[in-house]
Image (cartoon, rainbow, N blue to C red; front, side):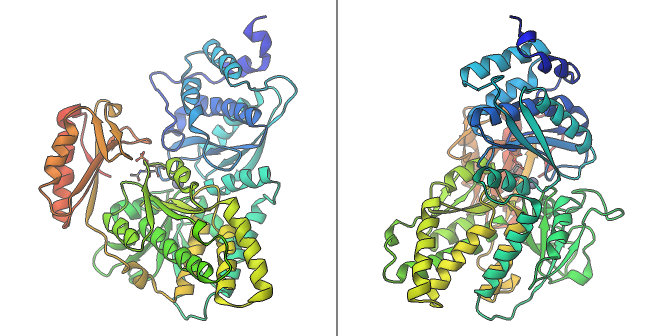
Length: 559
Ligand code: NG1
Ligand code: ZN
């Protein structure tokens, strides 16, 4: 039997989506990303990939179209696994091979071979369900059609269009559908609003600055926050850059990435906002940073992902202490609390967390790595400095917590330990268990600030960031840089790390590392030191070393 006969629909569809010339796509830190105009074949093939993943797992999976904080002309595609996390990494090489297969025949061969190797029930009457989500990018409509066609080309696969969503909303839906719990968008909104309300009700009666001004990056996050606002009580939120006509372009001069990297106020913010508590989301609503516009020039005091992590860690640790210090919590010793960061975490944050007695684990860049590490704890908190992260609770710990809270509600109702148990349970319902989520993160920040009675200024002063600098080096082949130890050491090309170390040693509190980006064709350079001038100079020297070893291939830019 020919391949064509085995999979009659597949080939017909594939031919409608020819591969663009001279481009190679890789499933990087966050799926496939590129100019939106050349992504149709990639997205079509990602549809096939998602269908195979659903067939293999016998569960619903997700396919999200987004390029997060990238410019509006870019787009991308990534797959959410049945538990709501990122697609398992073992499938990434197949994903790469599939989207780069030079012609339909090769593609079919690949699929047949993979189906056999992975024992995927294909063509035997099994069905596959794929939830589709997209952000607000104009190329999203056409790419959605490509994804649907890819899914339809697989026998028994069904695409369910969930409309325009934040990335974490789609992941949340996939997770809930597979758990058999409520999974619609209004369920999501209601869950967030309800848990936030409960947390605020469980907080001491503190007066605090409740006004919050949010930069929505002119993307989907701002739009959804407006929606959420309608059912939220106890918060005074003003959303700017919601993406409405005339408000500006997606991620242009605004959004969490811009605010974090440039340390500049986003568009539509001005003198009236000086000193205010402000927050910024990224283009697909999975990153969150806070900031205080400062009186001088265009600058902000940045309250980044490391500080959000620190705030959450302080709160969770305090609640666990209340709970565990109470006699009768049988699992006292067994509760493990860990925090996960990347090498981009500011050294001052890591030092602060360690001083609190917390276990700090370093993972490579990309939430798929951090998530995996965090899941090894009863309570694992992970954040990238750029504001992407969440808190994971193990099922085992949650059932202990539930049992303990039930018990306390009859023996010590209203006690601090009872309230702590209830607070932790609400945090697990509020904060997205699938992926980092700017909306639920924002509500948890607000609930914790309210609990502590802290202003953003008080929160920001927990520790002072060490000055840092990020640069990008354009090189001929970024993959010539190979790293180890959670990307803190270069192992290839040989000799480069030694010279970086030599340079770093010249600076007090110096720290520096280089790594190939997973989303852009650059090598990223990060440096930290005791003064801004020193951090800048260390980063510059590292860029020059990268150039020397890898060959300069264009102008270098700020991160
Ligand atoms: P790369 O391009 O691999 O550095 C960037 C961010 C990651 C992550 C991904 C996905 C930095 C330094 N890197 O990855 O943290 O957010 O994009 O969006 O911010
Ligand atoms: Zn994002």
